Length: 165
Figure 1 (cartoon, rainbow, N blue to C red):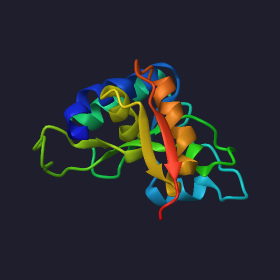
Figure 2 (cartoon, rainbow, N blue to C red; figure 1 turned 30 degrees about the horizontal axis):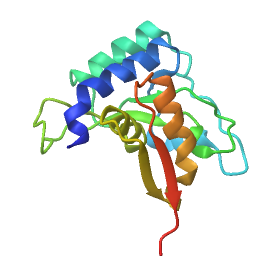
Figure 3 (cartoon, rainbow, N blue to C red; figure 1 turned 90 degrees about the vertical axis):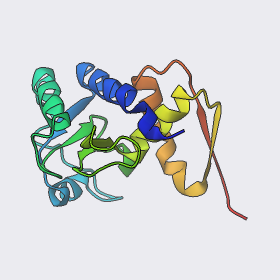
């Protein structure tokens, strides 16, 4: 299976996050996002777009999907905690714009889910019970669990990390 088999479901879950007040469309450049994210020792700063209305973010996401914006012009971000000691929880990007032909979906999509969003949803959709990862993903587990919970997935996979031999 490919994550792209589930793009429709992932898109619907992204809209659910917006409706729950847990995601927003952000216009910051990649450099500005990096600056706002903070460091491992300093908290981040909220994006000036963080408090966009639900209606505005839903409209912008739909327009992103229709191809109205250039690559990198907007992203969809989860609204979590910009002061979290886990930098992965600082309003991570969920979707980005990329006008590129996809090997599985062709030109049907010009927005693509980020790995940290697609991975837990795909696991839940496929009924995976245990997602086995190497230790480099340990810091990503809280985000994995957050997406499964907040996207209200029926199946709740568990991510387990291990050391490489």
